[in-house]
Structure formats: C-alpha cells, structure tokens
Length: 187
Image (cartoon, rainbow, N blue to C red; front, side, top):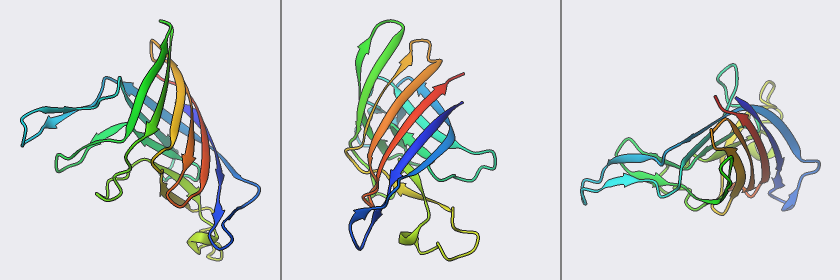
C-alpha cells in the first residue's frame, strides 16, 4: 500500500483558462506488477491473446469506505472485456535494468472510449463544470474522467517488486491537466 499525490489543473470551459490554484489530493494506492496479461484464445485466429508489454501494470486508488475519492487514479496496462475483447491500453518499455532497480516509461496508446471500455481514469473533484457546487453535500463529489491518449508514465521498481515509484502526466478527455506522483511499497 502506498500513496498517490495528484495535482489537477481544471480548465474552465467558457474562458478556456486553467483555474488557479490547482487542486491537490492524496490517496492510498495499490500497485500490482505481474507477468504480461494473457487473455483468452481469439475465436477467429486461434491465437492466445497476450499483452505486448514486458509486464502488466495495475494502479488503483483505494479508500477505507470503498467510495472513489477525488484525486484517485486507476491505470490498467491491459484488460479483457467480458465478451473476450482484448485491450492493450499502454505501451510500456524498460529503460534500464541494473539488477536491483528496473526503470520504465510508457504512453497511453488507446483509450477505448468508442467501445465504452475506457478504464484508465482519474477522479476529479466536482465543480462548476459538473453543476453540483450549489447542491448541499455534493461539493466534494469525485467525478471519474477518462485519461487521454498520449498521457505518459515514467518510474522504477525494485527487482524484488517491493518498492515502486512513478509519475503520470497528461490530460483528461475534458482537457484537465494532471500530474500524479505514486510511491508504493508492494507486499
């Protein structure tokens, strides 16, 4: 279990200016690194579908109540839909492997919004754009926004997969700029 410190610059749609100051959130985050995801067999080709990345990466912000919190982030390098559709979202490369530390970088290549399978998301705090600022009790509501293609990640983890750190930077599909610093001690 670790932490993710998220900074979000929200764009005001009418003026197309970023609001100041940025919103900053801190959330508990879990990171999982595993062998590349292997899906089901493709019914058309008979081939087993497998992620092209050197490892599968999943980052998930958590709360004690189970409710998504503002600033929370969910990243999936790949996934398989219930209908068998295989999705690889991120293109991840190993930059350096010193034996003790593995450094990597990646780019979100595909959102899959057109297929309604956009699961790489960041939770923004409700605001004027979502028209809930005047509703009592909804001022801090977390609103998930899809992370845009071109978002980058760079980081490192220990070869025994116990320590992980990374920075994710990019835009949401609503053009909000964000930066997330993730530090996790994986167990």
